[in-house]
Length: 297
View 1: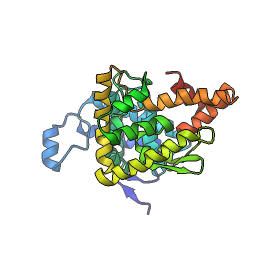
View 2 (view 1 turned 45 degrees about the vertical axis):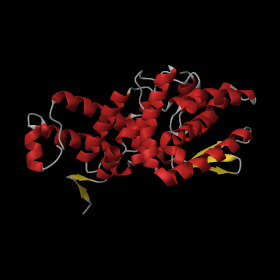
View 3 (view 1 turned 90 degrees about the vertical axis):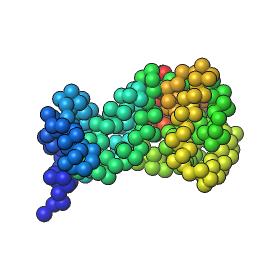
View 4 (view 1 turned 45 degrees about the horizontal axis):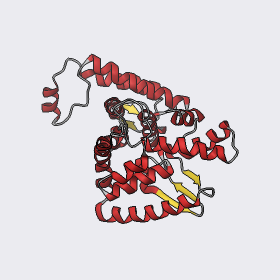
């Protein structure tokens, strides 16, 4: 007999998983949250209003549609990295508030279909995920990225920010950076892909990355990565406020990287499409339109 998870088979199709989740979650509509909390001894696993139900299921449907377009059709084939990559793409153009709703909706969905391995990780990384969103709804480049970096109060945050700026790394990937020869390697980035950036044409930056990563490793040993990461966003937000920079999240450094790197690639003789192809790979995406989107902000 196949393994059962919360009443649904682990190898169920995603379309069926959506229907199952809808049936499971809507049991709470019309039911008192307080009563459920008392009966179950904890947070409610259900959704308690039609408006929230419709919004959350709309988000789950959007996610499932994206997975199926990528050839992922079964519940057991979805990995946490797929979910984070989807949310990461959202973070480029939505606000923190919207990213919170998207994260909560997927958390409820995966809880309902028995994938607590994913929903637990979403709860654990909740602050990191929504902090990538921004007030304006679009990740915009910093006008003076180095000034922002140098003005951060915490030296560990300055290192994280500069590494983001020099490599286009997501915050969660900064601690994974390794320098191998003339390349920067980031293993198991979003979507489970390894990112490999060729720095043979910018060796001065490569040396700086080596120095910064060695310093960051020392800070991680002293303070722990979780503390550095979680306090980073507040420091960045406050710094932007002091400098008069528009705060649109830490993704802004990725946008700065994309804009500047595209021009570097063009200067080597590549045409726009060739440069976009390289930049897409460096940013950790599959679709060239993401490169064009980043550098057009």
